[in-house]
Amino acid sequence: MPAAERRQQLLDIALGIFAQNGYHETSMNALATKAGVTKPVLYQHFASKHELFAQLLARTGDRLHAAIAERLAGVDTPRQRVEAGFVAFFHFFDDHPDAFSVLYGSSLGSVSEFKREARRVQDTFIAMVARLINGVDDDEALVMAAGISGISEGMVRYWMHEGRRRSADEMATLTTRLAWGGLEDLS
Image 1 (cartoon, one colour):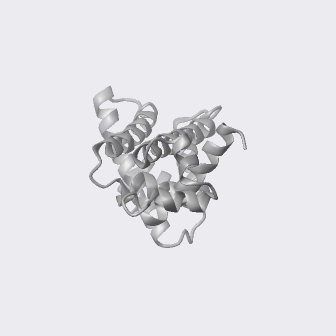
Image 2 (cartoon, rainbow, N blue to C red; image 1 turned 90 degrees about the horizontal axis):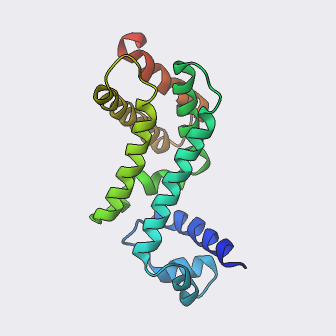
């Protein structure tokens, strides 16, 4: 298998194992065994478990942002852009449930580099949302976007915990209603 292909395979397998076991409970032996490679092959691609997890976080966050940006392309009105963003957000985690566990789970532990990377992912999402908010200054837009980020995280966390009983589209619609109209719109 070519090196680039093997690296992607290892990252895909690592996503599932880290999501299931967490960072500290996952060993390089377990990763190598699940990937069907020897530990030296794993170390040819990643110098350490720490490096592997850091790259996995970055890759997963970048994929989430790319999915949202792709869904927003060509969408006209602010309301449609907000809904398209939530559709992309929920569909991404519906298609990659392990990604949610890795990005938002407790596996980040006390490793500051991992927390920074997770924060970068969240801050990028917040910046994307802030660009959709008109009529306020940049600082207020960021504050409101951070609130919307919290709403999305809370709703996807609940959705995952409840076994994704609703479709990703239903969840995106509910999240859009709440974020766009606020609680007053729902009363």
